[in-house]
Amino acid sequence: MSITKEYEWLAMKKVSEAVALTLREMVAHARPGMSTKVLDTYGGEIMRDLGARSAPHLTYRFPGHTCISVNHAFAHGIPSEKVILQEGDLVNIDVSAELDGFWSDNGSSFVLGEDVNGHQPLVDASKAILRKAIDAVKGGVQIADVGHVMETEAKKRGYRVIKDLTGHGIGRSLHEAPEAIANYRDRTNRARFKKNSVVAIETFIATESSYTKTLADGWTLVGSRGGFMAQHEHTLMVTQGAPEVFTIDNGIWS
Picture: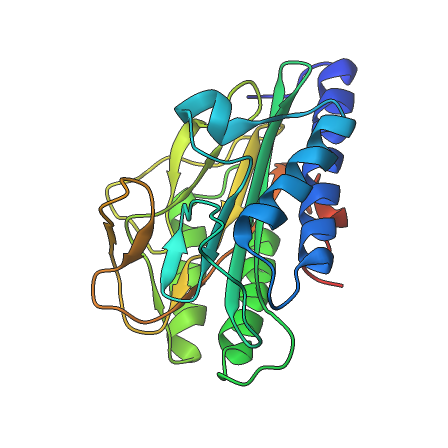
């Protein structure tokens, strides 16, 4: 969507604050020994108290309030009583929601407790790459150029990017134009960021794989060649200068 009226800006601020708070509180609440189902229920209660509704459930009938992916699961992990969090797990929580007809999206990967498995450098790289990517977003800039920034920065750090997962436009629905904000320079994409448009910029930084495959549950994505992946995501409004990051309170960079 493109923000043209003050009420649209205020509405995007409100829904973005809701998803940011939910994500921040879920990350803080996660503990070894807790199931991802319990953690998801906690997040769902926060969203409900804020008047927001789960975007993946509304849009796709996803079987959970949020997506929680652990270790080799890259994305779209289904919350489950059978998945018990352990010390040192690489955990990704993706929270998106609708509130009063407006939609926002954010996500964060983090190491649970002590980094006994050595995942923290991957997480730190993803956070830093998201910051560099967002700093490059301005009205008139080619979307593919921002993807080039992400892939270049990933390679500098010895990582890959996932090429079949992308950021996207958002605002009046969960996924809008531009539908593919890739983590690499997609030379077929000549589209440019438009001033006042709302987009979700997200990293997909991986150790071994460049593509994903879907597990038998029909939802969970893992690497086609295995390994691990970190994802971080903000919803923002494009300007002619620094973007306005609506989900800044989610704690990714704090």
